[in-house]
Length: 379
Ligand SMILES: NC(=O)c1ccc[n+]([C@@H]2O[C@H](COP(=O)([O-])OP(=O)(O)OC[C@H]3O[C@@H](n4cnc5c(N)ncnc54)[C@H](OP(=O)(O)O)[C@@H]3O)[C@@H](O)[C@H]2O)c1
Picture 1 (tube, rainbow, N blue to C red):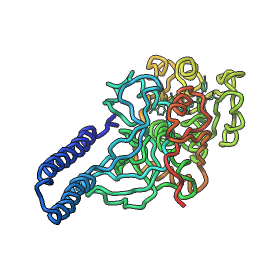
Picture 2: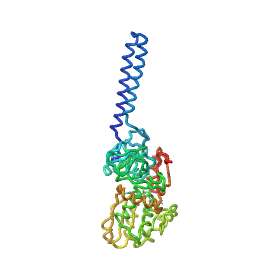
Picture 3: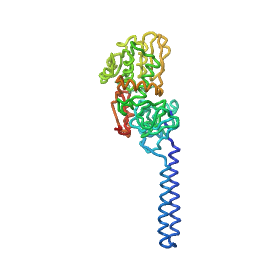
Picture 4: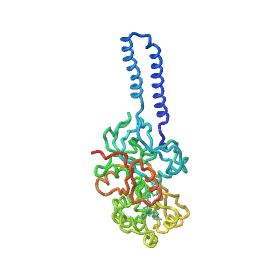
């Protein structure tokens, strides 16, 4: 992942300020030397000239200074304390990017994983880094190769390289789609990564079709809450799991069967299913092979399925790695507009509370989504 700040721009900004200050000081010293030997009217003229000369470099430095913004920045990997709220250079969109004035950004469990640095090589992350892979906001500026989006468009996106925990972020057209009109920017920010994961697991990979039965583990979480609704919109029968306080949510989202995993073994209820969506792994994945009918499919978000187990049960399986996809995000927009999908946002925090938001996301017991609000919803 990229998620890198434009450090060289920031340094450039500091240098520009220093240069203006040096020029200003040199002029002041030279003026003091000549003042005492000058007639009064020439002094006054010189004062005016010096004032203008002193102001000019500051104005031109300010004009050439790159714009800055507030953002949550990581300069090192580690615990939540590495997240700092700072003034940083505003990103400049490349030819194939749009600059987005951010209203809200979604928080995902992966944010804390990236922050830890444990998988820095795997994700390709470099420091400093602004986290945030779900963005919702308004297009401020477009790169020269942008053909579909224009300034003023309300959009949302899963941005592969992060940068969402900020007042401005960049996205490519391949990552973005029109924000559904029927929901707020805060709700929209909870959609892209989680909904695309559910879509790519169920539709692209497991090829879930009408009339089939799907078992969705973690149905009350970010991915699970979209997976239940996408599966229902597809005409499938849904069995979903969650803990006791989230049984009501499983039902509200459309689950035909809700299982409380703290009280009931899912394999006692779910049998001969066509598809399993596993967002839990370990023991949950190990016990899932046996509930899939021959020819069925296990899509897992957190592990590599065990080929020997797949073979033993005559089923197939695949790990999922979500990718940005504007066409699929547009399909999701349509389902939201048709009221077939409703994002569940259980917590909204200001950007300054990114630490608290990431700590909650890392519990793996979030109801729906957590969203950081960056700016007020436009009127
Ligand atoms: N591979 C990818 O591309 C990809 C993409 C997105 C997410 N992920 C990963 O997938 C996982 C889920 O993501 P998410 O955003 O949906 O997380 P989340 O919002 O934290 O949701 C986790 C869900 O799991 C449930 N849960 C926890 N322990 C469980 C158990 N033992 N049995 C059944 N359900 C259990 C929780 O329900 P209760 O709160 O009721 O316990 C909750 O519904 C995370 O590890 C995330 O990093 C991977």
